[in-house]
Amino acid sequence: MGPLGTLWAVLSLLEALEGQTSRPVLTTTQVLKSFQEDKFQGEWFVLGLAGSTHSKADRSLLSPFTATFEQNKKKHLKVTYAMTRGMRCFTWSYVLIPTAQPGKFSVDQRRRPGVEAEEVQVLDTDYSTFALMLSRRQSGNHRVLRVILLCRMWALQAQVLNKFICLIGAQGLSEDNIVFPHLTDEVCAPG
Image 1 (cartoon, rainbow, N blue to C red):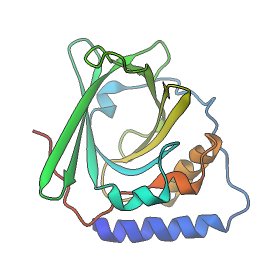
Image 2: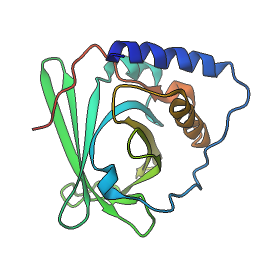
Image 3: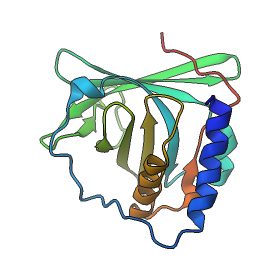
């Protein structure tokens, strides 16, 4: 299934999920018992975003993009994102510093003075198909929250989408806060 077919499948599943009255709840208190950085490394496709600053109006603005995780010599994870906008490829990166809790990281902000602390947590993953990540930071008096759905390919299983939707609800967000990539653009590679 190509990127456009995936988008239609996701949108159809979302519409089907709207009619359900009971959904399993993925709570934020769930903690990974272990986290294997070596299995998490590599390229992931960002198939869904939800956040306290996202709305339906943002849906047409999000191009497909990738996240590549690489462990450095200090055992930190460098994350490099690559997104196509028009004919240009934009990349940005940051470093995740592991905390004592498996799968939980603080974002290295040393190169960005004045930026509020941010924590990123991998809440669920099978390493080969999907990962659900949660990002939290304060911006002034506002809490900025993001839920990120990562997949190893441009395909989305129904149970993974359901986990994503449930996590969004558990975070106090709604389906209006979900943004899926606009799949008319090509995905670029960092470098």
